[in-house]
Length: 424
Image (cartoon, helix red, strand yellow):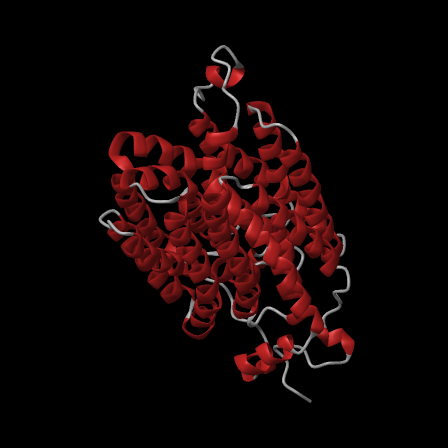
């Protein structure tokens, strides 16, 4: 009989399962943000830019909060970080149900964004990565990231249905209760600390300073910007874009047979389809990331996004083109996350991965802020999303190029002291 694998050698562990469930909730709630865009704007007769700015502020807070919560997790533990994050998430969502001005929504979306940071990739992926063996790390990160896509599959259609029953304000209250459920998973989150005396002696400042002096870290930072821009823009505006531009759904067609009879429902379900296909793409990225250089895989993903976006924007929009776009873009959606997180951990070590990845994720969310805010502002000015699309295409091509010069060799193998090792 084969000997059972030690816990460190198992791919599926309690830490991975708990982390995946947390990301289902955290990313799922954020993925539904675009579904609230039209109902809130219509309820208050606001321009599109008003609630777009609220979502954009949430993305920016998510970005600034990620390295902050990463540092909290590395100093005091993941459980305190996740507890603070879940409480912030729930409070922001609950109070948003009673917000009546753009400024109130914008302020509360800052709180929501901090909650997303405290329950998001920076804290969870660092914990899962540390709990996994080197052999399983790339796939463990991919599976946990893919779980966020399951949330994206579930939450936008659920939000669309709940808004029809209890209104946007009632839906916010229900989502607040869901955010609090994260606290029930905390007992499962245990992972070994980084090993070695040197890893405990070197300060966070030394590790972060060394990373910022490495040109490859800057290139990773710049490359992740377009990912945030594209994902946040589509999450916040694609349902509204589809609602307004897409041709009518054939009442005798396949979509109608599945219950998708309006363009607004198609917009919500397209976000879910992106999430569904992203599970496949992210798991595949994790598998490939353990075999091939991650920087080349990232470059190919950004090339794919660029091509798919160009074809979609140049083709008249129909329900069929929406489905094809959602499926193809979904395969490339969060495939960048396990590769980027894995690249950071591979080059700079696991001791302060949460903080180091957090700063990289800040670039992602600055891009997300601009994608969401420009989407609303340029729509109000020109009555079209076309310019925002072309900006996203341009920076996507930039990201494809900027990953190529990255030195994927760990710092320890370049003759420099690695993060987590005391200086000689």
